[in-house]
Length: 218
Image 1 (cartoon, rainbow, N blue to C red):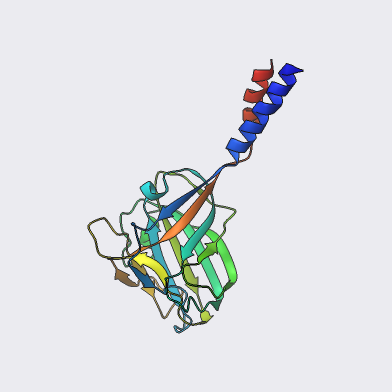
Image 2 (cartoon, one colour):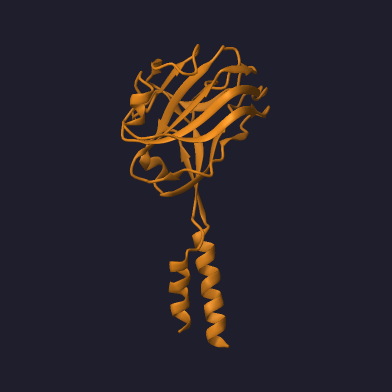
């Protein structure tokens, strides 16, 4: 009986550890500015990229949630609806985004984390909004992480997301084209870093893990 209890306890501990999620703040430190790109229906179409550095995340595993925080504007964010929207995630070895969207992939293949009509809800000041909750992207903790958002039609006003600009640390920058969702090149803003939270979730208990736990019972 004691062995059975010990085995059960070990299995519970192993299971809990296996599904533990790490939440990582990214974006270069305390926000000191805001920007509404890429979700602003004022523009006819949009293609936009930015990235975060590997050391900001520092953990490998399935990326299950990416959030941005609304600026401390009392009116919050207006939200909006964006047609033919795609949200891509991609590992990349580049240090900052450039004008060529494809080159920013760093030779890697992006993963489509969302495709369809994207509805961004209205939000309050300082509210965290889930931008995408992928089920098909695993961060390798070796490369930097690039995100791309594009859409072909949008309805919605300003959504001032927190970001940081100016300072001595590196900035990944952003690139955008506000007239085409499939443009090959765009305008670069070097001095900007989007503030956010990235959740890396542990994988489920594998058979090998269960085997190791079973060895405790023998």
